Length: 216
Image 1 (tube, one colour):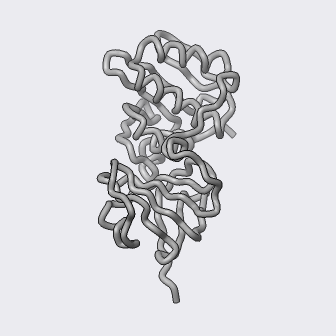
Image 2 (cartoon, one colour):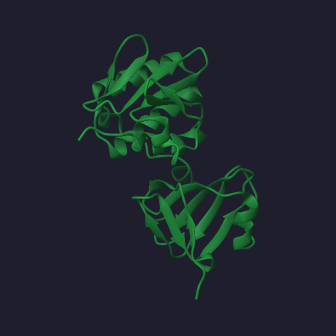
Image 3 (cartoon, rainbow, N blue to C red):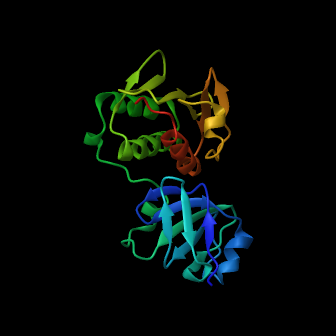
């Protein structure tokens, strides 16, 4: 009987492409990789089963080929049957055309461009793009640099220029998010807050946002 393995806390980037945590020495157990560059490892899945309800990836170890062994625990998994895409598309969410953003979204992006560094403003755009791929809506500006999601305020973002970061609050207690959180989370008056500092935080940030409690 073939040995089956399961990876938990898997974030779906797009169909057939996922990100999850696995230390480099475990990546090497699947065989010899052709490359050892950068921070993220890359695994090619010849056959696998993704469970979106539980964020699990099931596979036979013999169906996995390591392409790259990185220096961090971050791993990009790619299913063989998925269409070929450019490498930079694998490592970031797709950015929709600007017309896909509502007026509040565009105001958020304009403020991010003017108040944050170029790198962090790009992170803000990628974050919003990732949300809009699965959740249509529009941001609404509050006081100062605060923006809430409409029509359902299940996430809330604050632009923080002094420290060049984004602070995000999501609906639900800290205990609700602990099973999926790969970023530091804190209580925010009964909800949960975390920070986004770089592009590497995006998959984990989007997973937390999509785990937020929605209004029925």
